Image (cartoon, rainbow, N blue to C red; front, top):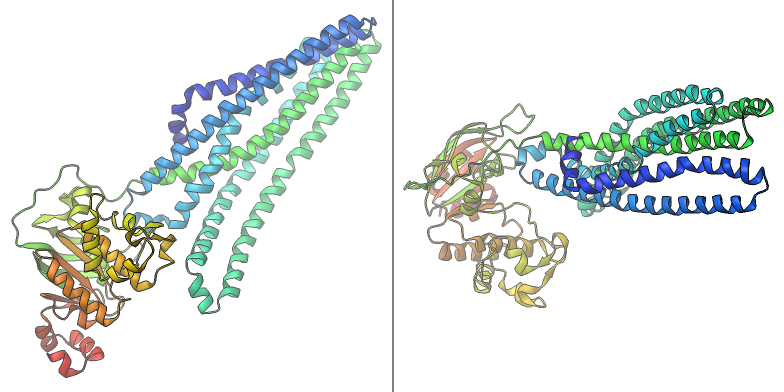
Length: 576
């Protein structure tokens, strides 16, 4: 609720005008039965056509004014609700972007997508309904009861019994349905996750003929959601029938009581019609109120889920003041570093220590799952180490501001991610101020010049979503070019040459050596040939540093490295 109020405060005028015009409409609606009473008792009772026409004109004026008030209220309510939803969505997106990788792993990508889309839409609908009906419906209910008392106290006593009974039914059903709506939103999270995985992994699913199994899993999840929705639907479905039964019995009681009063001469026929009209108004407003409560339940459940994300503070804080770069000979230094992923009892890397000198090339090799990617993810501070210290240029990494850290390090991720847009637009993500000449130089160094020039428009060629109109090797070379455009003193390749053939890989490494003077380069690879000529090679084995040194030293003294070399090269080639 606090987040709704926070973002709704920018629309204070609209939030006040919407209920004001709705209340104006409600007041006019309460007057209508009194006009009808006069038409029946005086106009029809005395056969006065002129009076009937005059009162009819008054009814028409009340109806027209009520319509204008209703439309105006709807306009302001919609403007406030959409504005609140938009503001909340923008704030939530900005808040999520402050999360570290650990925070996102903890909440889950699918849950965050649901909160940004479905949950905020539900809140937006709830705000709209509340501004229009939250004051109007109770006002009509209690106003009708008060107006009934002004007509006849004895007949109006029926209202004092009916209204509390109806509120008991409405709020009883509300409290029963609130917990179920929370479960429904959690089920939507799971369905969003399955949908996202299936759409992104459609090629793998078809390659392994998993369509039937995935369809069955999806049907199970949707069946669970349907079961919850059916349960809450049955509860909510009780609302209208029960309220209609109670109110229709109340109308019968009013007619029975009113008929006796009319027969005794203490009440007019028009007054009885007015009492029935007021009871009918209560019926209509309670139906609206029931729908409002169902919508409010959904909005309340979604609001709590959204607030849970807002209440989660980013675990990784950055200082505002930029750190001073020391004259350290080491660009990167790990001191007894260990790291645990969220919820894991076993360390991903353990007690790792090494120093990478400025301008040197560091190769990182090891078996799958040995901790290579985890190790290099600590350098740009995607995660904070659990134990030990990571230093950049002689200062603890936690002393650097976010912008400073991002300017110091360029990363080529393991998975090649490109966005819909031109090649130039994708490369400018690395450096917004890069010139066309710098972009072309980066493309040439990344060995992408030939295929870029072959595309229609060259660097203005449009890439489809996720680079679907490019091959794996082409995507990798463009992501490498994007990092090169950044021109950072530290460059990290996270197994980002795996889709390149050996000849292209060799040309790329040769071009990097010629152009990256003074840049500290980290290369994670499964290929011995890729890291063989590095100034320092780190051998990872099950999260620990099994060896560190040059190729010759490790081949002679590190069993794990020797085993990797001999699995890819002959002993003669490995010993060269």
